[in-house]
Length: 485
Image 1 (tube, rainbow, N blue to C red):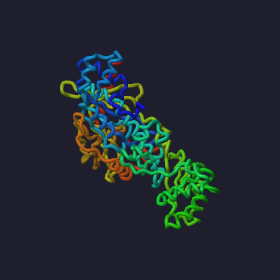
Image 2: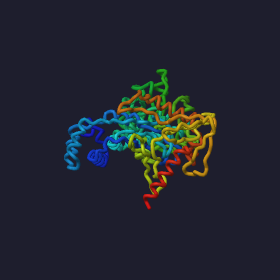
Image 3: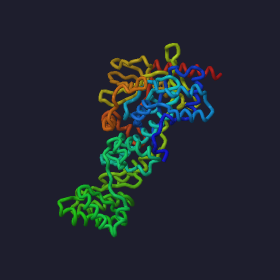
Image 4: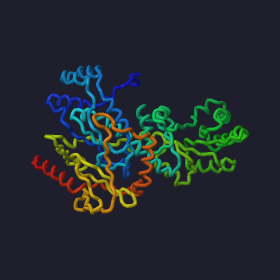
């Protein structure tokens, strides 16, 4: 039961973070100011974008960052590190500044979504936990948004807890799923912690614990007359479950002036069974009885069911949402961008034979550019002290096709990275989960091109650079190439 006791999440690090921090301490460079960027390289499932989630938990983690004497004793037991360094950790706290996209922002590959500006040791120690939160929740929020899109306005509930990779994945996955657009969760802990609407029906075991299906349904609606959704596939949907549900609706609920809220189908050919069930329910006068579908659903199976004319009113989605089964790794990384020397940040670049692993160096701004209709047409990286003047013609450089620069005039822009923490403390209240969820919805409805939201061959969103920023990056690459020779 150790995992359920209070945990110090500051110990959630890769060992190399402590190894390097000990080295920085001995080199007397631990307090040198640096900047690290969090970004990712590829959208999950071949999509056109991703959803940034997990920021609230990152800020919680940083505000509480500390080491206990027990933690320090553990590190001493490894016989790896300087005792004076380890003893200094008892008074340690995170002292950095965090700049980040608002949680729920649509984001694109290779752009900074969070920047840490902190003493070198501080920035090194927090890497693993920051990435764990952002990678997990961004993955689930992004997957959920795709599922919501495929449901075409029908309610979707998170049913995933029992198939999640562990307890934390179930709870924080439910949070991310709500950001991504689910209407409710069946996970009670998440509902309580995050004030998410909670929803649930019944299990096959309820029916199997009674002498027959009719009796099981009858007892259930007698206990829950206002809110009964009956699971009709324990034995056979069309010859047993559905007839018994209709019988209970007519014999038990309607004499009380009540209506059967719905039926749920959890197996079989959901498209066919839902169409046949709809006909039978309507013929029985239960036109308001909803049909809920579950059973290993994702955006592709939901789209297929609806394309076949499936009569589904809402979906319960479990394992393929909570594990993002089709693409279970998000892949955000944490890379050094700059080191402050003699009062000035010096840009740093990681060079690789793999082009996509070359980093964008230096302190920077990220701007989202909007056309006159309010749609985002590009994201733009500039130097830290640059503010583009879009009232005049402004040239953007596509780093993947630098010979193909483009100009915009009359556009609007907003800065995507906001300062949310200074000296390890939040500087403003975080938005509520409902506000984050609404922000996602508003972007997708009013700012992000429908062509970017399609599943197959989505439109590529441009991440461009200002001429000055591009020049700086090329100069660093050329300098690095000289050192290789």
